[in-house]
Image 1 (cartoon, rainbow, N blue to C red):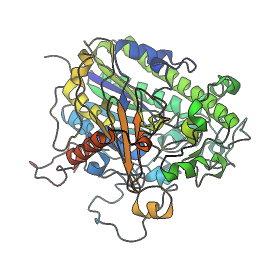
Image 2 (tube, rainbow, N blue to C red; image 1 turned 90 degrees about the vertical axis):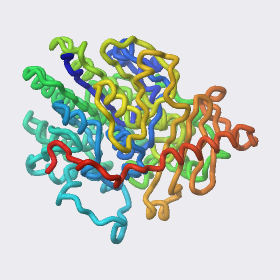
Image 3 (cartoon, rainbow, N blue to C red; image 1 turned 90 degrees about the horizontal axis):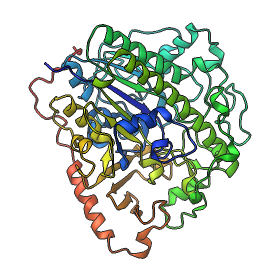
Image 4 (cartoon, helix red, strand yellow; image 1 turned 45 degrees about the horizontal axis):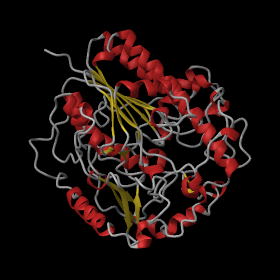
Amino acid sequence: MARKPNILFIMTDQQRADHVGFMGNSVVQTPHLDGLAASGCVFENAWVSNPVCMPNRATILTGRMPTAHGVIFNDRSLDWYANTFVRQLRADGYRTALLGKSHLQHGMSRNAVVDFRGEGAVLSSEPAGWDQYEDFERYADGLPEDPNDFYGFEKIALSIDHGARVTGHHLHWALERGARREDLLTPHDHTAPGHKRSEEWWQIYEAPYEEQFHSTRFVTERTQQFIQECSEQDEPWMALCSYPDPHHPVCPPGPWFDRHNPDDMPLPGSRHDSLEHAPAHLRIFQGVHPANQRDWVAPCGYGNDRLLSQAIAATFGMIEMVDDGVGQILAQLEDLGVRDNTIIVFTSDHGDMMGDHGLFLKGFMHYRGTLQVPLVIDAPGLPALRTQGLSSSIDIAPTLLELCSLAGYDGIQGNSLAPMLSDGSARVRDHVLIEDDVATITAKLTPIPAKTRTVITEQYRYTRNSKGEEQLMDLLADPDEMQDLTAVKHPDRAAMMEVLADALIAADDAGRGAPTQGGHVAGLT
C-alpha cells in the first residue's frame, strides 16, 4: 500500500502576492520560498475569497464561502461543528496540528470590532466556552486544557496576537526561555515597549525582546517538534504552520528590523491616485493618517512617503525572518527523508494595500493589493510549473483532499486545482468570487458598505457594493488599476455584471442544515 503523503501547510498573515521573490520582487529576499516555488506549481493568478483574516481563514479550512460557513467578518467564530478538510484527514488516520495563528475564533478581534447590542439571530447550542479558545485572557496566568478537537486539529499551539505582543501558548513558551513578561504582554498602542520607533507611526518599531522569543521562532520550533514526533512514530501528518507575520504592527526583532534601508524602498506610483471615481469610503480612508486610525487595525491612508518606506522596509524584514524559518523546516524534511512524500502549500490569508492608491492595510478596499495572494503547491511526483489560470483560497481544501485520495463533503464550493498541478494550460474556473461584509451595526456606524462583491476573470475585475457603487478594471491592460472603466461606459460592464450574478447564484449555499448520515466527527463528543 502506498504511503499517505504528509502535508505541510505554510500560511502567513497579510502578505501581498508581490511581496515574495518568486512573484517578481527583487528587493525582499526569500530564497527558501523561491526554492519551494521552483519545485512546485506557482499560481500567478491566485485570489482570496474575502480580504479579511477570519472569513478567509475559515474558507481555507472549510472550502466554503464566508456567507456559507457564517464567518463573514472578524466579529464571529467558525461554527464549532463545521466540517473541514482537516477533520477528513484526521478521520483517515492523520496526525493534525495547528501551530501559530489560528483566528478561526473571534477572541483576538474582540477589542477591534463593534459588538451587537442585543440578542443574536440564532441561540447557541454549542458546548460552553466553545468560542473562547482564542481569548488572550485565557492564557494570561497559565496554560489551560486544550480541546481534543479544534476544527479537526488534535494539537494546537497558538500565537494569538500580532507584532511584538505575545499571548497564547506563545507567551508561556517565551517565558520559559527567559523572556520578560513586561516585554511580551503589551498594549496595542503607542505605549508598547520597543526600540527605534518611527516618528511617523507608532506601529513601526523594533521588538523589545531578542529574536529567539518572536512568533516566527515559536511557530518554526513547534512545527519542527510536531513533524519530528510524527516521523519518529511513522505516522502521516498534516501541520498548519501559521505565521502571524507580516501583519502589522510592523516590528520584527533585531537583526531583522534593520535589514533594509527605508530610503531604498520602491514606492507604488499609484499612491497619488485621486480615487475620483472610486467608492466614497475609499476616499475617506485615504484621508485618514495611520496615526489617526479609529483603532490599530482600521483601514486608512498611507500617511506620507517616509512612513510608507519605513513600513515596507520593516515588513520585508518580517517576511525574510519567516523565510528563514521556512528554510529550517524544509531542511528538516530533507534530513528526515520525508520531503519526497510531503505536499507543501504556501499562501497568505490576504494582502495589504501598502500605499497602493494612497491606501493602507486591508479590508473593504477591493484592489489587487489586498485581493491577490501568493500560492504555491508542491506535490510529490508532479512537475515544476507556473500557471496563469485563476485560483482561489476556497480551492485549497478540495485540492488537498483530492491529492490525499479523500472524498469531499457536502457544501464544499471550491474547485480542486489538481488538474493545474500537472498542466499549466489547464483551467478549473473562469472567475473568482470575492465577498466582503461587515456587521449591520458596523455599517451603520462607519462609512463602510455593508456588502461588497467582486468577480475576477483573467482579464477584468468588477466590484459592486450595497450602496450601488461599482468599479471595472482591465487587469491585463491596466495592472495598476488606475482607470475605472465604468466611468467611460465600457461595453463589457454588462457582461461582467452577468458574471457576478451567476457567481452569486452559484455561491448560494445549500449545505448548512442538510440531512447527513449522523455527522460524526472524530474527537468530538
